[in-house]
Length: 195
Image (cartoon, rainbow, N blue to C red; front, side):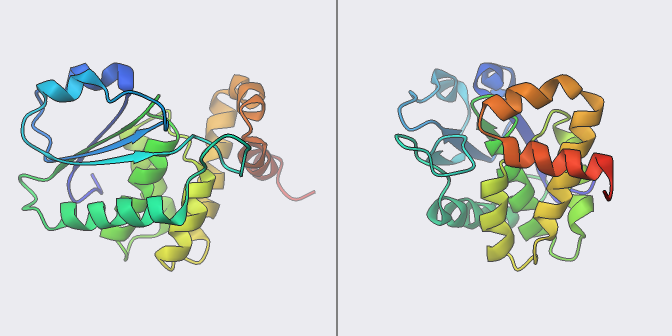
């Protein structure tokens, strides 16, 4: 296990399964108009950060894309988590499905907590924790720059997309349809190798 603290990642529909695990910190990423999940009423005492933006990777009319202020807030939250005694530190991060925004947030929090670790190691840990991870590339673009990672987190995410597409090629069309063509293209380019 690479993570210096326990991490749980899930979607809204899975929150009830984690109310008794004793999390110290909850990072809740919701669509701007989504209600607060009622499951939080059953969680014990914890620190909580709620961020609200859509799961998009480009500016889309009528939607709120991830912004630098969102990433700054989640990195501050991650720094607070890192100050917890390791035996008590347990992060639960969720978004709608527990696949994109949450895995990008987890990537950035881990990269901040483990500055000496290479980006591919960080993304492998993300996959270990959440096997269906597909991190939001816009969040990684912003966070990579803030953390001074020189594009390495983004490059490692491209490898993750390649791996997911090779394992589950049926993801390609729905990801494109969801406005994620840039991520799909990056993964496919690596899968095909130099042209």
